[in-house]
Length: 121
Ligand SMILES: C[S@@+](CC[C@H](N)C(=O)[O-])C[C@H]1O[C@@H](n2cnc3c(N)ncnc32)[C@H](O)[C@@H]1O
Image 1 (cartoon, rainbow, N blue to C red):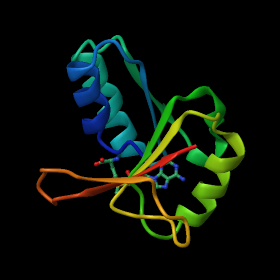
Image 2 (image 1 turned 60 degrees about the vertical axis):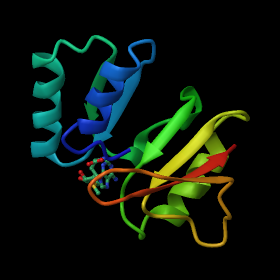
Image 3 (image 1 turned 180 degrees about the horizontal axis):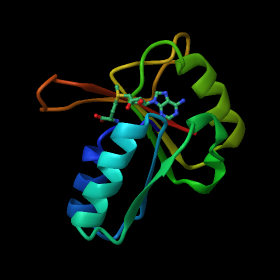
Image 4 (image 1 turned 30 degrees about the vertical axis):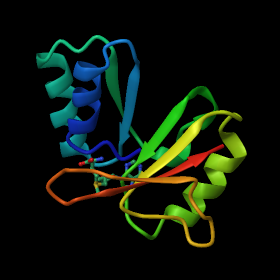
């Protein structure tokens, strides 16, 4: 959700080619950049949609990953709870959901030392 320049998508497509990855990005330039990146990289197991995450039906995904901002997290949590299937996973990088204790956290060894907040739905 908010797949930006497509770095997460293309990385996952490379390291876990057995998965299928779909990004959604609202901003035209990052969308176009990621679309080109996927096309030039010949990634057959990922694609990106131009549009708003609020129009996505989350019921079709096993894992939903978001890296957004603190502002939409409450609304996104309610959407995820309403649409995601039991046994699936909701992951937010950096921004947690107020009053919703996560089930796991993972510290990532990346540039920003990001924290992943993970909920099992
Ligand atoms: C913090 S950036 C993260 C980019 C990327 N996921 C990454 O890991 O580098 C958040 C991205 O979410 C996008 N975004 C914000 N609101 C959105 C919405 N309602 N629908 C789709 N994308 C959205 C922004 O345009 C931006 O590219």
